[in-house]
Length: 319
Image 1: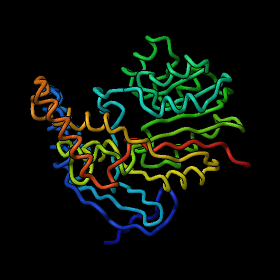
Image 2: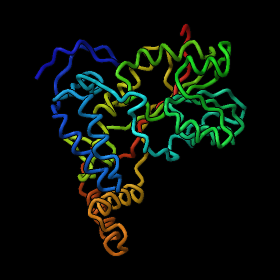
Image 3: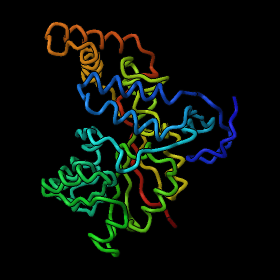
Image 4: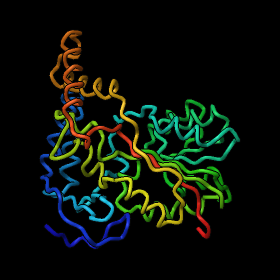
């Protein structure tokens, strides 16, 4: 089935086709199930109301035949006020990899979407001068209480806090680009803040991630959080590479997060236990984790990777 969407926002191809159509109520119900499972009863109706007010009745995803990017159409996203305030900010595999790749020489590092400052803390501990921005006032306040330099808002707020003349050796953004319908605008906003030798590090959910085996958390053909207003783009490595190169960056590495069988099976099993309301039972929890192993063993290679795609790049000549 073809679509009238103009072009791929990653590579510019017009070879697009519809791969999924989902009703807004199905997305909302999947979030309801998650909130109910984790005991967030006070959020269920509030979140459902915000989503129903924002989403059209149906949303389609169109896929680019050239690079594989999937784009929501339409692509409504959370406002800063409505963005889920119960989001967690764990230390991720890509945080540690990026700190290692930054090297030992102190650098000026800018993180977009810094959350509560988990990466900022790692970078600072390694000797780097790290600054973060995020639109969640609650997350930024927590980062600041840890002694980290974090700014609430966008680039205008950053300018007010660090000055218009500051330039950075590296920019990082993890699990961010999938939330943005217009990545061109993101890269245009970044450019004035970069030095000529700057580096770029980013991550986002990958298409082969094991979480798509967690049937309890699925809505349609993907995880409940992989739909508007949360995620509006589903990236592939070729799509990330095409987008970054189109904006003048030279890709150094573009890889998938390695699959940890122990971590993946444990997560699959624990989610199953939480949804089944037997996470407090040691025996039943172990059985659920065993089922997680079986799901991984039975899965095709299309579901055998860690959560993230990861890309690093340098500024190209003339960028």
